[in-house]
Length: 215
Image 1 (cartoon, rainbow, N blue to C red):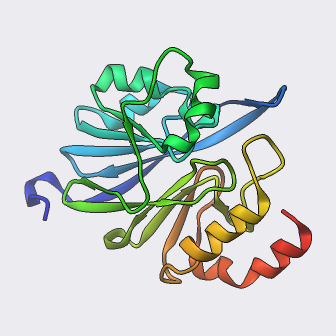
Image 2 (cartoon, rainbow, N blue to C red; image 1 turned 90 degrees about the vertical axis):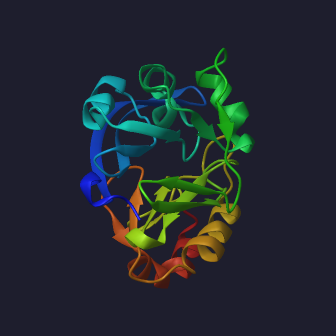
Image 3 (cartoon, rainbow, N blue to C red; image 1 turned 135 degrees about the vertical axis):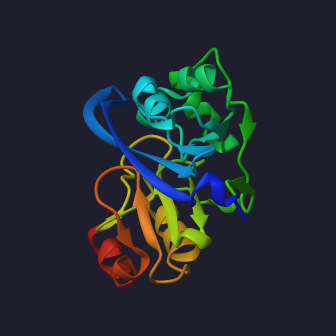
C-alpha cells in the first residue's frame, strides 16, 4: 500500500486540444489525459497535444511512465516532449510502431507494452489489455483497485471507436470489446480517450446494435 503521507491513489483528468491527422485528413479534437497516482508519483495515460499543461498537472511528482493507449498522433504528439521534461519512459504496444513513426519518425518509444503486463504506480496496479481494432496496437488499462478501465479510443459512451481509417478493423474492435472489456465488472468506470466516461454495465447490452449499425 502507498504511504499515508503520500495521500490516496487517485485519478486526475485533464482535457487538451489539438488536431488528429490520418489518411490525408485533419480534424480538431479534444483529448482526455489521465493521471493515476498519489502525491509522490504518477502515471500518465496518453500525452496529448500539450506537454506544458500535462507537466503542470504533474507538478513535482515523479512520472513513472507515459503510457500510450495507441499511436494516433493526437494521443502521442506530446509524449516525447513530456518524456524529455520528466525523464519518464514512453510505453507503446509494438503493433502500433508503424503508426507511431508517422508522427515521430526519429524518436522510438522507450519500452513495449504487452497483453497482461502489470504497471505499478503509488501502490496500485494497472493491467494492460491488448484491445486492437481502432488500430493494431491499441491497449486498455484496467485498474481493479480503482474500479476503472482506461480504454483510449477502443470503447466510448455509446459504442466502439472509429474503424474507418488505416490500421483499423470493425470486427476486431467488437471482439476486443466483447472479450476483453465487457467481461470486467459492470460497475467498472470506463475512462475514454475523448468525451464522457461511462461504465461497463451501461455499454454491455448494446453490442448487437453496434454490429447492426456497423460502427
